[in-house]
Structure formats: structure tokens, C-alpha cells
Length: 198
Image 1 (spheres, rainbow, N blue to C red):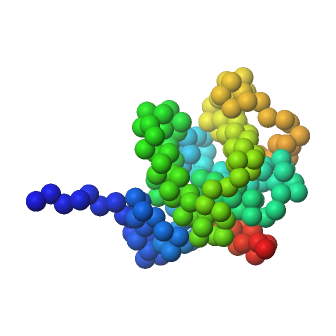
Image 2 (image 1 turned 90 degrees about the vertical axis):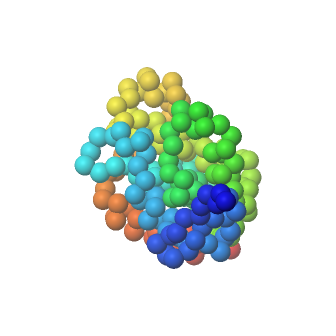
């Protein structure tokens, strides 16, 4: 008799997260921060002694989002920080791999995102205007990463991600740090934003 394949993952917090039916009760920020700090962007194909993690990327996107929409409420900055949170369990796949997999990846991502949002007091689906601003910040971050640590020329990066407004990225640079430092900063920023929610 065939058994169903396991569709859950045991987290370091002790939670058991069902990837097919995730609930907010099985989501802890410690698990997210830890997982994202150890997941490499660009499939690890970046310069430096440390991988550029999804947690570091998320901190940068939240910063960029705040520059793009400086009067936005803290809840949407929290949504920006958590925009890639599902990757703590499903990993970071580069766009060509997502395209090859098809709709299944997006559906899984959507289910996890909804559960994560609800866990931290956000609507399951955020407004499209906010989502577009976060995506803009995400693309600016990708351009910065591509040109600073992933070997792209500015021309090539601009073709794929668009050329960012220089005033938005002024004073920012890509940081490559030990995962434990990034994990701590991600958790701290999450705590700051949670404390500011209405």
C-alpha cells in the first residue's frame, strides 16, 4: 500500500509546517529569520566570503520601499520585509527556474504568504498598489545585487530589472555578512515594525 509523500517540514522551533495547508499557528519569526539568513540568492553565484541571503535582501527591499513610499504605514513596511518570507521553507529560485516549474510554485508561494501575513497581523492578500511598490523595491534591489555582486554590467542589469532612480539608491550598498548577524538584524527589524502596528 502506497503512503502519501510527506508534505510538512519540522522547524527548529518545533513547529510542523504543512506546505500544502499552512496555518498561521505553525509560523514563528525565529524560523523565518533563521531560514532566510541561510538561503542564498542568485543560487549562491555571488562574489564574497558569504552568500548574499534572502534575509539581507529582504532588509534592503524594506529600506528601498520606505524610500519609495516614505509615508506608508508600518504594516506595509512589514509586508515589504516579509515579501520573500515563504522562501524560508521553499528556498529561493531564480526566475528561469520558476518559469520552468510553472504555476505550482506560485500557488505554493501564495498559500504560505497568506498564512505568514495572517500570523503577523497583515491581510492575507495585500492591496495591489502596495504590492506594486514592493515589487518596484524588489527590482531595484535585484539591479543593485546584479551589478555589485552577481557579475552583471549595468546595461545588462537594466535590461532585466530596469535602471533605478539614482536618488533612491543613494548611500546604499550591498552587504555580505555572516548569516548569524543577518538573522539577528532581520529579527530585530521585524520586532520594531510589529511594535509600530496599530
